[in-house]
Image (cartoon, rainbow, N blue to C red; front, side, top):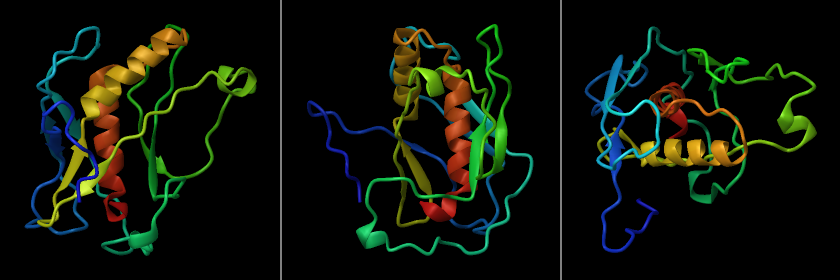
Length: 176
């Protein structure tokens, strides 16, 4: 089910994330491509987004053991997370997937001392054919850049943000 309503008569844009289930369910697609139709005014990393996954992730079952009918809003621990570090120059390293768990953080971090942080929620949908769609990831990336600019924080390039989302969703696809 698509929970988003079109705005001003426009249809929501969903980007395909995975192929139909003709590939084994545990295998993760190695190359992903997407293109947003919206202009990227101030966004860095414009254009084609490509994610490459070097390895497969081990999953215990095709779908997570959840009460999908009564799933509310809140933290649901998944199998993997994407981490990237930002250097003093404001640039982010390549980043990558790691098992879900604690993260290392400097005690002087702005998020700990001043509450200086950003959150972007993004929806992923599984279609009846088994493929997965992301709801407007480029727009989420641009919103994160705008928020970071307002908070005087560095932001990852649009392409890196979208690739990180794709990798995270694919690694955790049993939760979609």
